[in-house]
Structure formats: structure tokens, C-alpha cells
Length: 309
Ligand code: NAP
Picture 1 (cartoon, rainbow, N blue to C red):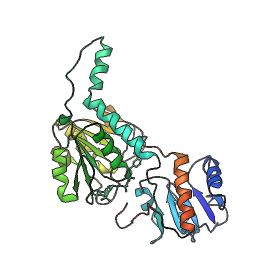
Picture 2 (tube, rainbow, N blue to C red):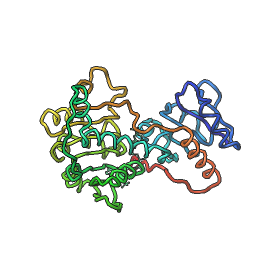
Picture 3 (tube, rainbow, N blue to C red):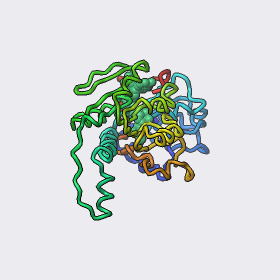
């Protein structure tokens, strides 16, 4: 079996060495557009060039080194019917739960207020929070959204979840489909976005959505930058509909230096780090699936390209 590694890492051996160790039955190659065609059976990819699909025509499946496959589906000559497999959790959901919890606590536990007090040498105790004042709405109840929602529910936050299909989750009130989006938003003060980027979800967090949130709203976006309409967030902050936002993902990354988000005190910016790809867990999962696929066994995480995720 031939496995081709296609990702712009200047040190590809960091990936290929563990792939060889985990999958000793495979011949492992690094993508080289100037070299000979490999006729690979499987490719492990991150943002592959269109040329890959012109040259490698025997691929049985490709494995994405991330959960989101919006970038991959945008490759113009992706062969119709090619099996695309996304990363499922692989250590990302727990990181995401931590990140979201941290951003939530910044708001709900008034951490900025206490930091400001410290700067001024002030010892002052504020009232304890009422959890009922901080209802959280999680958009997307997949590998990541579910973990985030459960983590916050375990801490007794009131948690609402919204997905495409019906879900039943203990201690979490769930909503399904576009028709219930408004109802979901109206319950929510802290909006957490863990959706995949698809034609249906692009620009979903616009001014109308933000206006539906409860007063003193907080937005935590860990999905994709294109879910959020940037100007609408700025307007919602100006209009007092949103109190603060924590943004990990952006329409253009790195976020351009002249983007107005940089100078807004109410916005926390992180450079797409809320859930990093962990090499060991990732390659263990992918090589396990390659082996199963090669043996004709079923694998999970196959992308439904008609849904876009
Ligand atoms: P997943 O398991 O496929 O879950 C996606 C969830 O979104 C599902 O619950 C799905 O509903 C829901 N959904 C999809 N389209 C929808 C729609 N039109 N309306 C309502 N709900 C919809 O994906 P995941 O592994 O949780 O990852 C989710 C996304 O997180 C990724 O696509 C990526 O964009 C983002 N991400 C970001 C980072 C980062 O570092 N910032 C890292 C990893 C992932 P159903 O349950 O009904 O199918």
C-alpha cells in the first residue's frame, strides 16, 4: 500500500516517521510535484494543491489533518466520489472545551474587573454569579460542540444546543434545524460557535442573530471566520447588543493588521489555537483508519460532500 503525505510542513519527516512506525506495511512518500507520480492508494492531506488530483489518479481515500474540511472542498478539481475522511476529535474537543470555558469565565467571573482592581491595588469582592444569568448556546453538536456543551453543563451552566438534526443530551436543551434557530438564540446569552463552514452556515452569525441574544451577550467563535459577519459584530458591540467577543478564527488568517477587531477592547483575539492538531493522536487515528479501509472494514468520519461536512 502506498501512502502519500501532502502538507506544507518544512519538516515532513516529523509526520512520515510516525506514519511508517504505525503503518509498517505501507510505503510512505512525501508530496513532490516535480518527482514521479506515486500512484498512491491513500493521501494524508492539509490544504492540498489542485495538482495532487491531476497527478494522483488512483487514490482510494484522502484523510484530512483537521476536523473542518471547508478548505479541502474548495479545491476545484476534487474528484467527485472520492472518499474524504475528516479528523474526529483526536484530542481537539477537550482543548476546545478548555478554551470555551476559559473565555466564558472571563466574562461570567468578571476576571477583567479583578485584573483592573489588582492594577489599582483594590481589594473588592463582587457578588457571586448566578448561573441562571449566563445561559450558554452551543451551535453545532458534533465531536466538538458536544464536548463543549457537556463540560459547561457539568459545571451547572444552563446549556442549549443547536444542530441540524435532533439530539438528546442529558442536562442540555437541544434545538434542531433552521426553523428553531431564533428560539435557540433567544435562550442564549453566551453564543459558542462550533459549526462546520458550509453553504448553509456561512454568515450565520449576523446582526439579526446577535440581536436575538440575551442582553450582555458574549460571542465565542471557534468554528470558522466566515460564520461571523465582521461588520455586524462591530455594529452589535457599538449598539450594546454584545458585551464581548472571543474570536479564534477569522475570514482572513492571519487577521490583517489593519482589521478593526485588533483595537476593540471588548474583543479577545487568538490566532486559531483553540484546538490544535495533536500529531500522535491524529496519526494514530488516521493510520488505524487506513488499515481498516485497506482491509475492507467500515470507517467513521467519511465526509458527506452534499452536506458539506
Ligand atoms: P462534526 O462532528 O461534523 O459536527 C458538526 C456539527 O454541526 C453537527 O452537530 C451538525 O449537526 C452541526 N451542523 C452542521 N451543519 C449545520 C446546519 N446547517 N445547521 C445546524 N447545525 C449544523 O464537526 P466537529 O468535529 O465538531 O467540528 C466542527 C467544526 O469546528 C469544524 O468543521 C471546524 O470548522 C471547527 N474547528 C475549529 C478548530 C479551531 O482550532 N478553531 C479546530 C477544530 C475544528 P448534526 O449533528 O445534525 O449533523
